[in-house]
Image 1: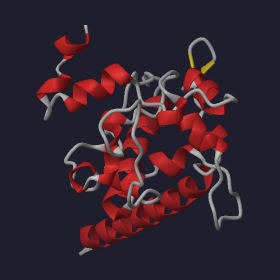
Image 2: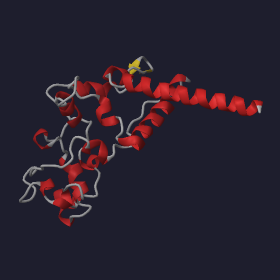
Image 3: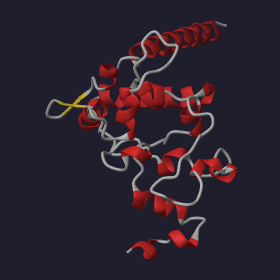
Image 4: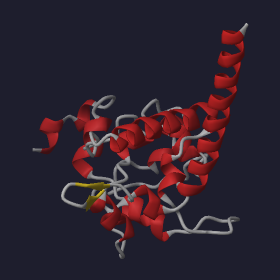
Length: 201
C-alpha cells in the first residue's frame, strides 16, 4: 500500500514537472538567442555560423530569406528558429521536445557535442503549415511550365521539401528559392534519366 502511494506521488510529480518543463521551454524557444545560448569550447556559441547566416542581410540562404520575411497575423511578425524547427502536430512537437530534452541532459553533464547535421530532418508538414500548395515557377528555364504547377511535382511529389530546398548554407539561386543546381539535378535524376549527373559534366 505504501509503495503504491509513493509510486502514485512520484508519477504525479513527474507529470507535473514534465508539463511545467514543456510550458517553460515553449516560452524560451520563442527567442532565437535562447536557441544559441549554449556555449561550446572555447566559449563558442552553439550554431554560431548558422546564426550569422540566418541574420545576414541581404539574405544569402533560404533560412535567411525566411528570417527577413514577416509572419502575418502574429504579434511578433519576425520568423524564429522554432517556426521551422518546432515540429508540427502532437507527434512533431513531441519529437522536438524529446530531442531537446536529450540534448539538454548531455549539455548539463558536459558531454554535448554540436551536431554537424539534422538528426531528424524537417517533415513536409513543417513547411506546409505555411506553404500548403506551391505556386511554382520555372527555375533556370527547366521545362516548359513551372515545376510545382504539375500535380505530380506538388503535394504528390513523394520527395521531401528539404531534399531540394536546403534551408541553411549560403549560395544557390536567390531568384529560385536558393536552390543549388547540382543538388536539385541529383534529386531530379531519381525519376528523370536526362538529369543524370553525367549529362552535366
